Each structure stands twice: as structure tokens, then as C-alpha cells.
Length: 80
Image (cartoon, rainbow, N blue to C red; front, top):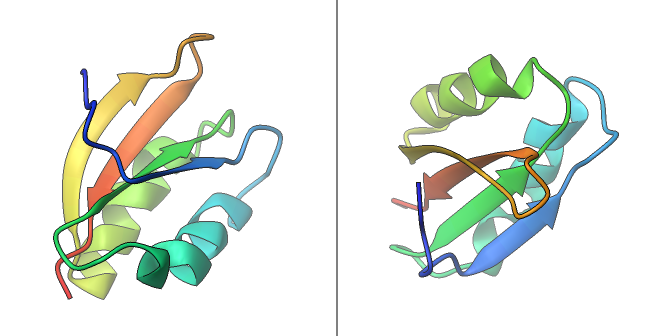
């Protein structure tokens, strides 16, 4: 997935569950409504945690891609 319009990228490499989603929640308001945040995470649980967090917080899960180094990258759009 190519998302050149990502407004903020969070480097969560090496963080274990639940730290990537805690960081996402902490930084959500750093982007305007409609903006996007990419969470780059090595923790395999992030593949499930980020979409689940979006459902619970009523934010839009855009999808999964990879960072330049091949690390999974999960993109979220701020809805509110």
C-alpha cells in the first residue's frame, strides 16, 4: 500500500503490545480530523491491535503496508 499523504508516522519498532496503540492514542490529536497516521511496528500483535483500536475509538483503519525497511506499517485516518 502506498500512502504518500500520511501526515504523521510513528516509529514503534521494538515496542511490545500494547505500546504501539498507546502511542497511537497519545498522538492522534497531533493530526487534524481527516489526517492520517502511520504506525510502523515490529510487534506482530499490532496487525490485530491497530484495527481493533480503530473500531473501539471510532477511527478509520485505512490498511496495512510496509515501511521502506520492510517493517509492517498500519495507517489510520482520524475521523473525530
